[in-house]
Amino acid sequence: MTVLLTAKKVSKVYQMGEVTVQALRDVNFEINKGEFIVVLGPSGSGKSTMINLIGGMDTASSGEIYYQEQPLHQATERILTEYRRNAVGFVFQFYNLMPNLTAFENIQLSTQIARNPLDPMEVLAQVGLADRAGHFPAQLSGGEQQRVAIARAVAKNPEILLCDEPTGALDFSTGIQVLELLREFNKTMGKTVMIITHNAGIADMADRVFFIKDGRLEKIQVNEHPLDPEEVSW
Ligand SMILES: Nc1ncnc2c1ncn2[C@@H]1O[C@H](COP(=O)(O)OP(=O)(O)OP(=O)(O)O)[C@@H](O)[C@H]1O
Image 1 (cartoon, rainbow, N blue to C red):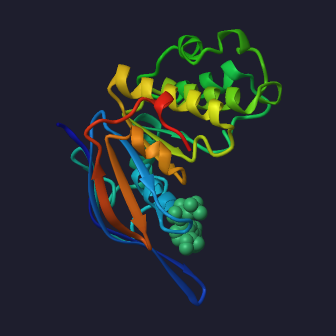
Image 2: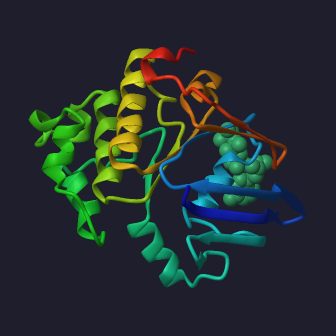
Image 3: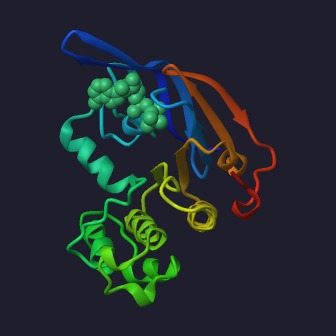
């Protein structure tokens, strides 16, 4: 197994005036190439903080994070920008598409800044939306918008796809479709997928499950037989 990312004794403290919040405490983990990881934990436990550090959107207060050999904890803003552009794709709960760009243009925009992008139209076809290329986000359903958002993240051809509650705004069957796409990206392209969710059912399709509580990585569970997306329920 190839280790893609390593976190050693990572802590994150937010200082808001008089108030100090310890969002992560001495967290250690490795993420392997091609893994499907689900992060579970109560609200406020530090899940988003963890994914923001992995994605180079924020920096740790202490500890070390390496992407392959590259230390992210010491990286300049320029290096972090490069890392976010090329190594990481993001999928959010509320899609975050540009409302004034079509589905195709949303995807094209992200490929324009990446080093080794895929063809936007091909990826749009892969998510089953070739016939919606010219639609604006407001002309698409929530599930379709999320599929465009996944296409946008995948088209950059990143090594890691970080997804923060990707099914949170969707009904069950649309949520399963989205999970199927994420699984397909993981299996057919061998890329790492990490999903934050409140849905414990989604954890059944992970290779490993990270349980976060009070800023600590309490437990890592290995699933010997991950389920297919259509087998999970919540
Ligand atoms: N930018 C910030 N400034 C100050 N405090 C923050 C900031 N971001 C997060 N926190 C605090 O850090 C803690 C962890 O937050 P985080 O968003 O990582 O939790 P979470 O597990 O993702 O929660 P949820 O499931 O509700 O999204 C919380 O107490 C939160 O209020």
